[in-house]
Length: 224
Image (cartoon, rainbow, N blue to C red):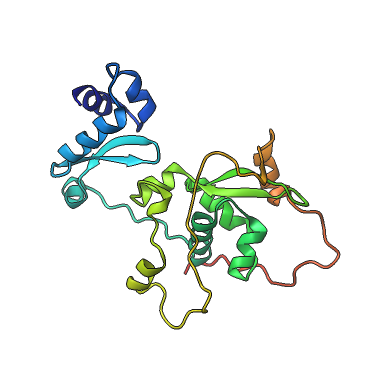
């Protein structure tokens, strides 16, 4: 526990569990050691938390206000960006066309630009379908910002109802998908080729021109 504690305090960024395990004496499971250390720090001023496969110390949530000297006015995401982020989180890996189908409105390139530049959404691969569209998923920075240990910690249907985020009658077959953010590509995804970012900058480079494009108008990017 002291070895893990020293490594985490000295690290300038979250540490992979595998990196901590390499410094452990033979026969010790790093996961068990870190779980005990996390419990040991649960009531202290700093807590040990896991984000994805990495561990870090962070200020206890109830003490954060004591260390704040300045309050920076955050830039609010537009409603379009928030809805797109939620769809990516719950439906990843997901393509632009699939996002538009779920939202029922076309999204502008600026929406994905903002989410990628913020570091919460990443390009995953290409779907094995006509046009080979790019697929999107969330990042470790997304988990860190929203205080999630894993993407499966996102609220489910009953939790969303309890929070008042799903009010009114819902369709009988309405469900909330079980989110997943595995780094490994799915069976219907291919790896990104060199220059994938440039393809994204060319508005995904994902689908050929159509004679009868979708008549839905592209959404407004005004802040909500």
